[in-house]
Length: 457
Ligand code: LLP
Image 1: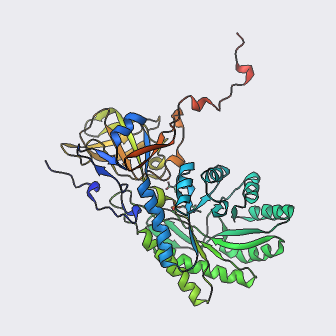
Image 2: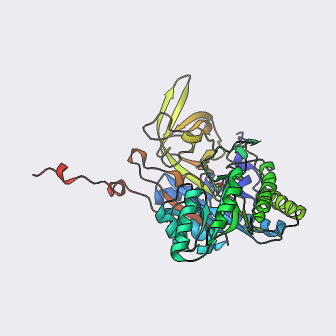
Image 3: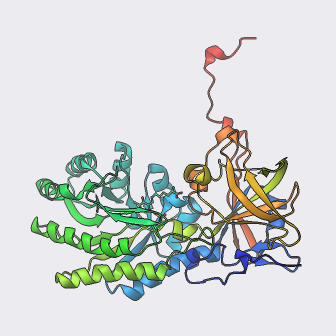
């Protein structure tokens, strides 16, 4: 029998999980079936049902360590990798990244609470957002969490709070560096059309404005240029641009000591994707900051970066059970699974591509067929794979989709009142629950029927 040249056959890069499609511990057992973290996926589904999110601890830790180690290797100054928790926010993820020495970036009270509950030290949390509520800003300030000032509104409220509490507050400002990244293209533009951050042309006014405040101390500078980026050049340019801003701020008496370059490193979802390694990415940004500092005789700032996807995406897989088939002769065969756009809104939102295989026949032995994998939601666009080649499969078979650790669970919804899946952590043959499966009854919890609608008798 001829074996399909499968992505599962590729050599695994242990030091940079974002370069693999599958979690590091992915294996095919003696029974020919798929396992991860030493756990048989079939057994996990028997116990925990489907759809099921699974995170591989080894892959997660290797990703965190890759950032830490590369920063230590290439950047002689102080540094801190900060996990962008929007990629996958949970008490477990907060706890894991914190145990690896990473900080955490939060963008809402919910993400802040989750980080604190997960044990991330307050001083390692940064608080982002282009429209923070008063309550959120106050919560951050009271908890000594550093606020990233995105606009004048943030600044005004921080000034008020610092006066009210009569204490200094260290701030970081976010600006738009004029680097635009779409996944596979890079442009330096004169325009800065983004809802996030201050325009670079406005910074001198801002520096002067901060000097008028009694208690706000400008300590950091932040920029983020995009996500799922495969090129190194944008980040190479970013270092120099940011150092120029630090020099400009110096003229106003500000001593910026923290430089946060955001996240954005891409991952390999399919065989067409060729992201650089974490090591290469960190090396590029470190060198660019160091060179610019050397040129201007500047002390090295504390270098921070905010990876999200490249920490958690490759560690995650989603398992679905196949239900209905619909063959449209000469056109396509739909195969429907028990999840879809509510647990993974990325295909319908961004037309994003993934890799997948059958759990019981990962190498697609036997006869191969082309399928369209549809979700179960009431929406024609709820399609996870427009076309995928799988071994002949039947109702009840399991499908494993790879690379779903980032922006799946965190962007999930209850569309069609479909409960969110359970999430498991796997490591060394053990599986532990990190998110309970929702039930349809959970979804009724927040519904309220006004009294006058409740029929008397
Ligand atoms: N820092 C800031 C300020 C960000 O806005 C983001 C992502 C990150 C860090 C992390 O970027 P990463 O390393 O994950 O690329 N929902 C989209 C991605 C949105 C990214 C938003 N910001 C998706 O599913 O592709």
